[in-house]
Image (cartoon, rainbow, N blue to C red; front, side, top):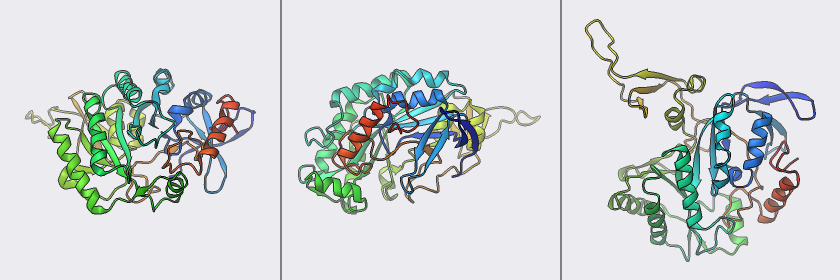
Length: 362
């Protein structure tokens, strides 16, 4: 999508064009909350940041003048907690929710840079206490098979976390590691001597069935959803997810008229007489019911991001991250060419005081 362009003044006094997105993704490409939260909120206060296209190396600018919503992605978003009030105080106010990848690969050492599982679960709960239930979405992503990790072992790991998050999350999003389709993932696993195995469709269907049964048996009643997978699990109550989700944005920010206009949403109130005879309007079957119990939303626009892969359900957003900058050191990483490159770029950002136009401080 071509976002509206505006003219901004850079830190050095030069005027230039910048994209001015309403929706910001922070970020699929790196863990901004874990490592670059200070950078993001510094740049938000400055009003813009820069972004380098990974395909052509061209630098462009992103203005936050029109930003109304941020979707954060993280494996360790603890540093967000001290910054979240800055979103509410921003003009205009910015709402958010967090895609929190909370895996358990501790025994296998596949995520060497993340805190202990107990600490990450505690962070999840603290964020929910701060933002409210529904604003923090649990992801177990990706589901990775190795000679040491079977589908049943993954279910046990999910059960352990799911028990502890009961009352703090509404949803579990997951995906199956597709290794051969992603060169970086395959190379990283081979280089790190991880004896991976590919998922077959039969294995995926069996896993989905068992996960659905676990969800019911434990009484979690989580919404189960897949990220970037074929829609083949419907009979188990598992639907494709929309990770950048306009429905969630409507739910959390329906009183933001500018955002609703951008999303093509009409807000209505239930049970208002629509005729002289006192008849009430029927709520349409596709209406989005809002948490206040009085209003509902009608979406008149398809906000799907046509630029994403075919099976991606995300709506349009501007991602502000950079590949090769996340030092979590996950062995299966799709966003880094190598751990060494990512760590070097992170050190560059630290050296720049986490204040440069781009994440790397350049």
